[in-house]
Length: 340
Ligand code: PMV
Image 1 (cartoon, rainbow, N blue to C red):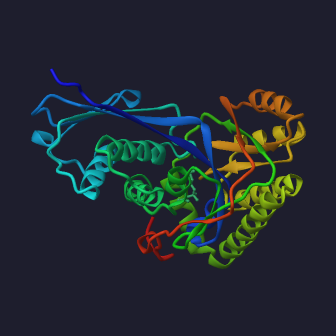
Image 2 (cartoon, rainbow, N blue to C red):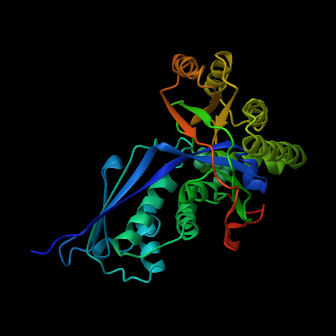
Image 3 (cartoon, protein in one colour):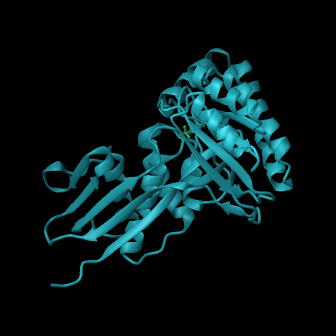
């Protein structure tokens, strides 16, 4: 019996530091990878004639591609496999078992969907000894993200595929951010889902009603993202914290916060966080607090006693050149009028 080839690949989570929602309307946002949690994809050669099986034990899913089940292109896992094999110029007639696992909490603004897709794209390329650039991975994952999110900005796939802090503007060349001083972040999970598509849709409806007001909030958020990027490059973490606080207030004005998110943010600040805000789509999901090494333990305890279900600590190390990271291809751009 021949050896069965087994290939494994991973992808981290991500968190938006500043700029969520406004990024959907063309303003910049800054996001960083979260390497403490990750998605894992494994590909194993299967018995001849078995076809492609996708197994996702975390969500109790088992999918057989081809045969009677056909090619379910609306299923994100199936779509990832189909799109990747096609992109790699490979036949869909393969005998493979693909297993997906992830310890990234789902629907909490940590990019679990994009991370799972990224790990799958990477593992398929690696299994067939083919190379994909981070930009190609990002593009493929974006196509899959559209199923989950309707019209995602593209920030998740960009940060996760590149695994670098990114200054992101939809439809433009994103840039990695050179970080001068270590950023210590605590991510407090409310335990409540934050359904991105629904919250983005709610913001869109409000924007249609009060366009002028929403546009000026988005402008302010965009300005904050620009200044956060600068403070990361200059190592001015106190300034960065203040800007995160301001961003939270603007997100409240967009009506995407919640009483629990507000109280977690308040608890973190009371215990000496440099800044805190909700992160991601909001109404649930996570808060993010920027902390010093000295206050880290206190802030973590405060988040838990204010009702966080779990706290994930992550560090963004200094480094990076601030190089242009990637061309975001044209089809990532979309008009403001796109329905969500
Ligand atoms: O909740 P998340 O991390 O999936 O982020 C949503 C971020 C938004 O700006 C609200 C939407 C988007 O597509 O960028």
